[in-house]
Image 1 (cartoon, rainbow, N blue to C red):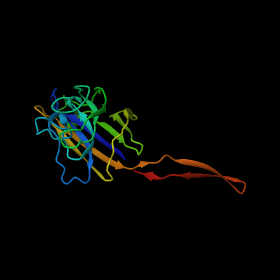
Image 2: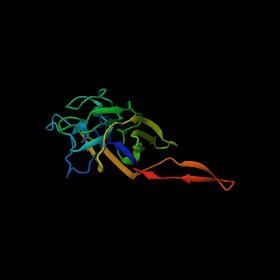
Image 3: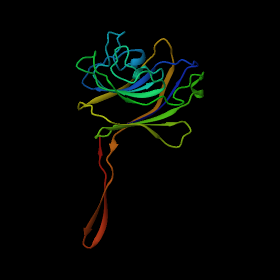
Image 4: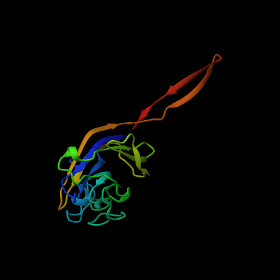
Amino acid sequence: MVFTFDFVVWGGSSSLADGFTLAIFDANVDAPAAGGYGGSLGYAQHSGQSGTGLDGGIVGFGFDTFGNFSNPTEGRIDGPGETKNAIAIRGSMGDTRYDGYKYLTGTESLESFSTGSAADRSDATAHSVRITIPTDKQVTIEWMTEGDEGYTTLIDYACTLDCPTNVMFGFTGGTGGYSSNQEIRNLSVVSVPEPVCMMLILFAGVIGLWVRRRFMI
């Protein structure tokens, strides 16, 4: 699957919190309950909220302004510590909603990720994001800052998570003692095209070119 969307984070304050998550979860879970508030971004567990994470969570892509999605505090498992203005990936729920959601990988702090000085969305810096999850699970996250001419790869990660036959996705978010405006537009979800295969066929003394393309999820 390939997810693409644009986002802005702004708020007219130097202290914005916390962020949002693109969450993929098990489609067999009825009315999945969200995860923890604040730095857990509605995906991971949080010790201040009965310790529970997103029911049926498979993977969460966190867009983290304040930095605690990468922080192994408040009941979250693993991570390098507070990393502001960063993108991080956390894994699947464990046997219960109290465990799992481990930190897998993430970026360092990213320039212009959020615009604390903006009093309106038109003053905020926009970013385009492309998350590609192919069948070989070599997950990539790319982004393009407003005004750039092409995407930059931020994460290239060999994922080992197992997925059920059917999944769903959604966005969750969180704030703590601060606040921010976290806005998403132009969301697109498509299947990953298989690379084009070209074969030369010799038939009746004539060489022809056969181009085959199949699509798979």
